[in-house]
Length: 311
Length: 242
Image 1 (tube, one colour):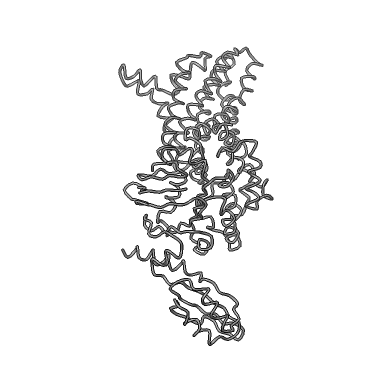
Image 2: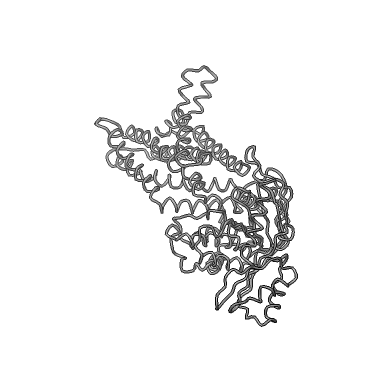
């Protein structure tokens, strides 16, 4: 779907991104991670045909963005970091305008507007003036304009920025629902969101891609141990030893211990959740919860950005 | 519907839905009315209707140019300020279509405001004799002058990062083109002919005031409009490389 080769963009003398190379396959949901100023927005703007690269090649669905930007833009839905909303328009009027701009015919426009409003739960807001909407609804309208023409590729730059926890969960669920319908490239500072919604990660630091692949692949490259959290009913003194005996486990710590529940944090070389679960259940422990630690992607991200800073 | 019409229609409705459009329209009508009463009609009793009308167009040309600067300053600078320009630049719309759509919306609004002053020539007609030809020529001149001023304003709005800067830049370009005839007075031929030919107002507008339509003057205003819009398109294209 996306082929990026030696992509470079200079702002004056400063290279915002340098020699980026990556591919995104059709239907993939890819997370784009990086610190502020790492080059994420510049890359997304080039992929969205808003900016032109200084050098390099970008092909989207087989089309070169510098040679055929007009055709490429038909295939893309782009949500920039600030949703491009006209405050004086109604939600319905704005989405219809966006649809017509992207080549949807007058006859199809009402159905497409309705479809995108339904996806974003905006149906009740159809006649509302955008300027009167809350931040969360504005962000939803921003995503709806990117979806309204059913693009093959959806580029979302920080879609969850500024949202409250409930809205973040809603946005995460929306991205999950888009899987299969669109190829999605999403940048975000919320690592949990990326971890739970994306098939693959691209990590950019100081204008260069420093890692790409699945979370497991990147973790394996870095040697970052997996983190697993286990909750058991009641006190679990023997669980500590059982978990330590599972192949691949490096370290086990008790995070919380009470009469009714014990929580263990397990550091492992790889994802060995099935083996841990089997060992504990066979030993008669009542397993309440077992999941991958949320901090895993965080540690990968910190490791990568730290390495780059040092180099 | 073409992208130009689509953008123009949205822009025009923005002019009509926001206060700024009505403030500009009200200000133009108020200032034109005051100038008409105070200066075009004046205290002179034996003034011919044709002279009153000519003076009306003289003063209206100034308000039209100022209104054009205020109308055009928001066209692209406001979109860049608010981050909405990316909706257009990420859509399958050509940069020239964006510029033309914006320009036509502002021109349509300016034309509505300009034609709303028609009650003043009608007042002259009630109290005196008036040539319809002079009225038509005068309004054609105002629309052509407004078109050129709007195109220059569109260029200023494309160049500037804020609306205020856009207004200053457009105003400076307009004033430059108006006072260029001063250079003609201090230069020799053939240079002074060039300066005179370039003068936005002094050389090309007075014939319209008097009811005379010269192809040369019409072509001049259309060319200024074309070149300013062409330059604005190039600036917008160049921004993608920045």
